[in-house]
Image 1 (cartoon, rainbow, N blue to C red):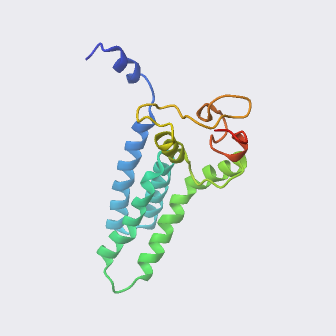
Image 2 (cartoon, rainbow, N blue to C red):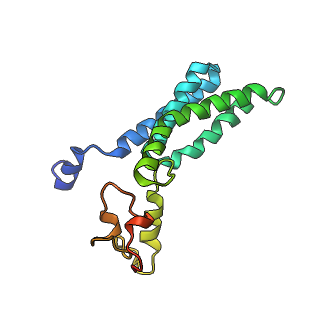
Image 3 (tube, rainbow, N blue to C red):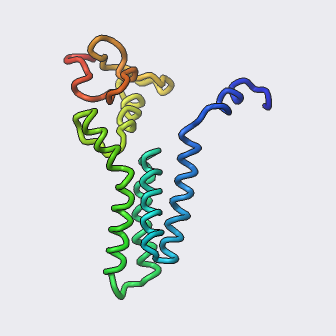
Length: 168
């Protein structure tokens, strides 16, 4: 395996998964520290790191629900005000890295997309009428000027203005 060419090629590439796993782990650790110490600075840092992790892959965002639940478990049900205020601080801090991405998506794509929409393209590839369960190239609508919807550069592939009218 040490000289297997495919592994050697991927060893030298920078993959988003490396950053993703690091940021996921770091965000969980920082959320734990923030709940344990209840320090506003730690809460803000944990939120920012969760926002950065969400930019790498948005599937992490539901993890933010754990933060107020953990606060509730630590502080109890006697007073909800600190739980709500600290959860709002955490949520606003998580939006700090996400908002520039959303703003860029609005400016470049003319549609509101919080982080990304690649899930829709993958859903289409796997579930369109021509899907065979093996092909990884999208079948179906063609771009104006030719080309498959997955080959577009700089614009979101499934935007209405990028798909030719009447395309199959």
